[in-house]
Amino acid sequence: MTAAQAHDQPMSTALIRSEARLLVPALMFIALVVAAVASLGTPLITSVATTFHVSLDSAQWTLTIALLSGAVATPVLGRLGAGPHRRATILATLAIVVVGSALTVLPLPFAWLLVGRAAQGVGLGLTALMMGVARDHLPEERSAATIALISVVSIIGAGVGYPLAALLAEFGGLRAAYGLGLFVTAIAFVTAWRSMPAAPVGRSARVNVAGALVLAGGLLLVLFLAGERSLWIRHLAVAVTLAVAAVLLLCVWTVSELRTKTPLVDVRAVRHPAVAGANIAMFVGGSGMYLLLTLVTRYAQTPHGAGYGFGLTTFVAGLVLIPFSVLGFVAGKLTPRVRTRVDGPMLLAGSAAIVGGGFVLFATARSDLAELLAAMGVLGFGVGSFSAAMPGVILAVTPKSETSSAMSFNYVVRSVGYSLGSAIGGLVLAAGTATGRLFPNDDAYTTAALLGVAAMAITTMASLALARRRSPETNPITPPVGVPGLGRSSRTGS
Image (cartoon, rainbow, N blue to C red; front, side, top):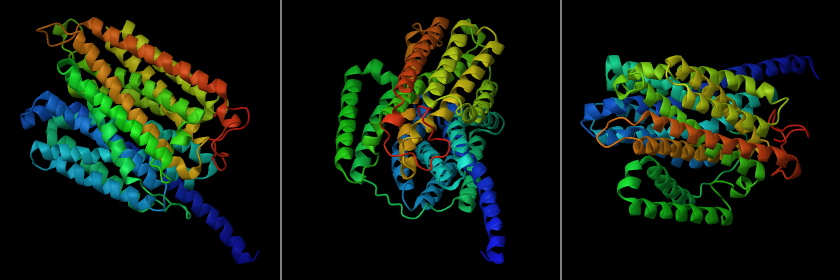
């Protein structure tokens, strides 16, 4: 080795480490932004209804349509992100989000607001791509912890966006709140432009357009039915017909994915016990987690005249989510260290049990605001730990090139679970609302909380069953080569 080469080698190593330090906050910032922007619809529903003179059910679509577009776009973006054009895919997606954010700010009719919110929701598909970038370009000792935190911030982003949007709406109006989305998405686009590296050479990815359309149709029906609670009450036959159509579409998509040479999602990999078990846990657990989030914020805003509740404003009720976000982030930081001693599926089981503890707190002690904050803190810690452990369980048996695709499917499962949890909570509260009354009985919240306890018990048992199988060692999809911190030694189950 020449003197010049010896001099260049440490310089090159230092450069790689410097780029890694810059890349980590960029990945986390983009994941946080797209999650927070997609959640902006939650505290603004009432403001949208009054500003645009539409019903609350119509205003609800500003939240639902973002979730729908995110679930549909995610598997497509995941497949594109597995190929050579990942950087272009990330930038193009963020450009769509920026344009959508501009549409929400401009003084346009309500239909254009929905178009803008749908464009913002597309950004939710970037979370899995951020994980793929981390796995490909970060040093071994940092990739696992970074992927875990990306998963966490993609969930706690709602807790960040909610109070900020509510505050801006209260003092600056609806357009000011949506202006926050435009501001941060523009920064995210510039951040991605400056920091996102190109995908490793040798990658290829083709999108099965027909499969994507069939999957989109199935997911649209599933999420639509989960969000339209009144349809199940007033037009049960129509709801059942649409549900059957959704199942048929998803079955057709599954068969086509197994037969095509360019699947949108590697269904065979999804059938691996570790991946299937993790996705089942994510679906049931996600339903329970989102159920409590919707219960707590609604309970906090219920006026005292209902016989319970605290009568908080939208902004103050949003502050109730701060313990959720803070403790969720803390759990996300701690989980990678705990994983050196505890198997991934066991972590999922323990985290689900903690979330169940949050439900128990809410069911038994919610007469004081401090008790409500405690329940949200417990929920946040459990959700943060669960979210941080989930990628490790899946990626331990997933090739590097399929990182984005595998985690995209997990996100779709999570979205459907969230929608189901929100729908179940709404149905239980609607059933507990007496005729002529505006607010449900207090007992309806207890019933919904007990359903959440049951969901988390199922999630815990599913995770324990996954831990007992120790499938990554006995039947891996591929040897987990180059999966730092995610592939574990022979003693671990993930």
